[in-house]
Length: 326
Length: 133
Image 1 (spheres, rainbow over the protein chains, first blue to last red):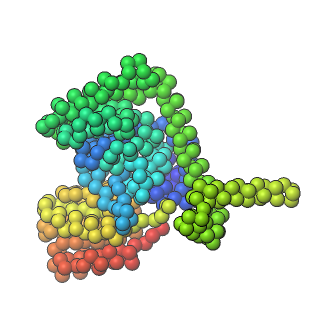
Image 2 (image 1 turned 45 degrees about the vertical axis):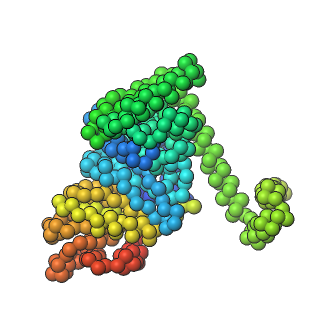
Image 3 (image 1 turned 90 degrees about the vertical axis):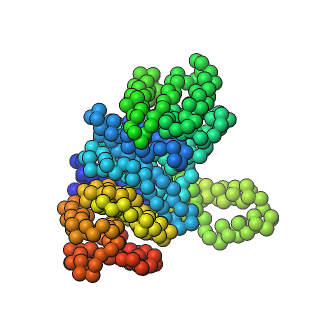
């Protein structure tokens, strides 16, 4: 029985092997995606993001426990950064979640970002598909500890939780563009710490600046949690369910799903074109162009145009050639 | 670009709270280009094996300083075999007396690293012995 069949039959080892296949890439990963894709699209995908040390992992653990209590199966994908120097990674999100690892209704997978800069790994989207086809009701994706612009999770999840904690910045940080804009739910974690009320008020003011009756008909709820003590997990889980209900009732779920599909398709087409182009350009040509750019004989845009144009001319010639033969 | 990486689980089963060694080894392997999943302290054998399975690791590294190695390690090894993780490279670090080391090797533990083991030694043992694919 092949891995996808075993996955669909509920085999955890097959799920783990398939996630690895997605990370390693290649033909077998593509074939597996083709086979399991019809079985995806059922899970509620929830992103959890925020600065390092805000308590994302602990919050994910508490939420997972809460949803298990509500009878849902849960998949967790936790992304941590890859070292730009060694290519290695220390994946430590699991430390906070280990108590759940023996529960058959939970599947936790740590992923290294492997050079990707948007807060996720290249293979995170495909790992989500694997866990979706595996039949998890809810898939939580914890991003790399995010700064301001790691907003890729917004194009991978239905519901995005942005976690903040006291002491991390003033009100200008809160109205800058980026991370807070993508929140469907805002959480002030570590609400027992000094400064929590101020952080809460700052975020509240930020939310109040949103135009009433503006483009968004969902007003992100602002919640306080103390993840370490499990406080606030129930209310947060309610908010996650309410957001999904809202997406369904308003018809936004279909729009969002469609948008996610388009973004994914665009990304894959871009990558594919790039791979094919570089697969065709010969090394001498590349080095000669790069040399000219370095020596200021050619500007980089003109050099790039030369390459891309010749790639498409090559394609057209190939097409015509085929046409002649047939 | 997609590429294969060696994935290693580092866990501390049992009750002793001295995780400095485990963290140092995790860091060494990170610097050797591996993806290290660190599970932290007080792991039961069941937790270690469940994590190794979900993370699809190539290597399990256990750190034990409490003296309970002859109870805990065989349990982890046995559970791992049960879950079809026999292919995984199995390493132990900590304080393991020579006689016990012999017994552990017979049980299928691939490498035992005591105090004084160098970082190169551990990293190259892994790269040379991991079965990829």
